[in-house]
Image 1 (cartoon, helix red, strand yellow):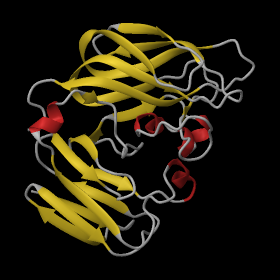
Image 2 (cartoon, one colour):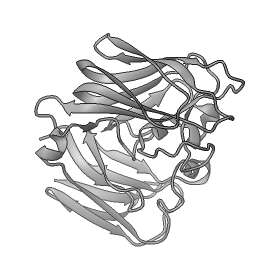
Image 3 (tube, one colour):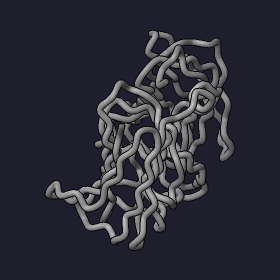
Length: 265
């Protein structure tokens, strides 16, 4: 049993639906600042297919507790499609994921609903720096599946921005063990405004690491390696090219592999 709710800032429930394995909620009023969309779940950790907004699609997420989506307002909206969370009728949906969905070889880092606050669902991206703490440069942008990278500063050109910090590091936590053998890196490519990293390091939770040489490309750059079992990956030791621009940034980081064991079923 689990439920989907829309909850006001003060805690009052505006809309709610409950179900055993699958729940659909239609919320029939415009969102107000402070509203939250909540996937309320108290069971053992498991995978869900969750769609918090009809303009953003569904996500396959690993859930360890209640998932709170704070409806973005003001500056926070700049990291989302202008269609997202808008209007006065909202379709919200969740169900338990199937074994086939969970077990597929896929991008294990993809989560369109990740956020700073959303610590109970995975994958989850964090960083030690985000440019001016602005939504269009947040860590979550690197795992939201949006690959537009020919500009910057507004959706769909959101990216992870490092505020020129040479010690910048992005971490993706999967919430459990996965097996991976490939990463795809999409640099932001708003040249000549942007620089690019000529070398980066992928550090893994098992203590190993891979150093990758990158090129000045808008297309995704593939990094393959021997299979390893990990619970997180870090994108770090970012060495920028000798170009005039001080602004390298990351549009998307994809981590391909499979789930280990019977997680989520």
